[in-house]
Image (cartoon, rainbow, N blue to C red; front, top):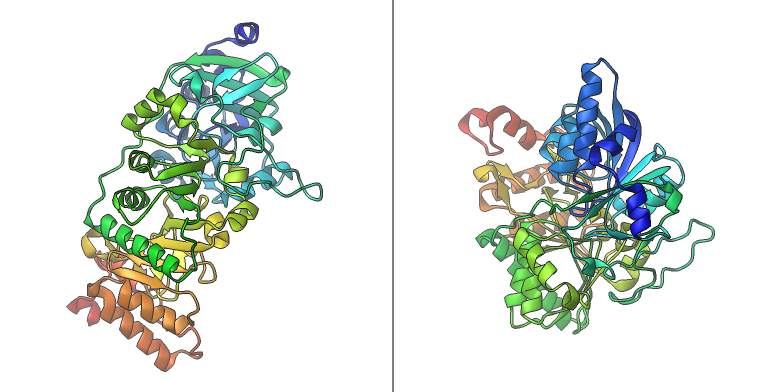
Length: 503
């Protein structure tokens, strides 16, 4: 091991000098586990090249969101041309919305096929974070897997940041397995959350490893807010619904595995579950594990969690490091080809919980775009789970911007999950079970149970007008006024009626 490391050891600046100013770069990183020093050195090289009048341009592929040390510094070069499949850094988001970066918002389960079939630009360079690398080219990843195994497989050259901040105890957390392409593809033999079907490392031809940089840096802390009253109320509705489904025999008494998206609402659901005496231990089959997992562990309510990333706050990461050996029995980290695989999600009967930006009265969900055109972060894996889950739940506070934006509207300004994929919609005012309902009944349920009281009459008026004037009464949209609410917000700063807007 020392011979391989010593023979390839170099500085981040050495690596940057080797990287072309026009290329496609793929990195590790799925909220955590992303490279932290090579991107900064490469950004400095790009700035210098631009000052000399050189035209620079690169594409960046990751697993999902990363930190400012990667996305931020590279976006600020103004040389990033294409980004996929998910992002959450302000500098990247701003440039996407100014039209300066082409952003491909892709279902996470689709990215591997796009790479393998050369639908996307081929990968020139892979830059990955690891805790260890062996002479045989076994690369042991840190706190996430994401797309890293696929990127390493298809990249022409690989550079490794060997991050000493992470304990060697992370070796053994990963289960790396990549499905074969059709028609050689075979069933993925995962029937329980703790099944392991692969190996604990990513295999790489050692000749592809062109450089190794030693680092000692943490991921940017993902600090989560304590659940507020809105998040807590949403969580209570979700938990009551799950218990009701158990009472009806639609969910077994031992539960089904849970998937939980990123964010404060999802964190609140698991935190409330940990405190609720009506619940016993659960399992998770998800993309990201957050700090609420420690609430479940402390309450002795987590049997096992399968994930693609451990996304903790600074305090949570410190606890992971302290308990690295004990927690190995509770977690497995998988490539997103497996964590988000529709076959596995459908077979295991996942209870999926994700956050919506806005929902229309017929059950279409917008997860990504503000006012129809401004990208937030991306669809991520929410579509993989919503379309294949046993039960699909979307959660949202009823209003935003101090009540001037309603999350429940006549028609969403952008559709990520259509009415055929959505089942359960929840706000702090209630839960609408849309299963088995016609579009008109869906609208009535969402209006009466989820919408903020300030907007219910407006939604009732829209539905009544559609029922009177729409050319078809199955889904009675009033096309003349479908986006009045969004236009009113752009013009007045509020979706609410005012005497001026009424006139």
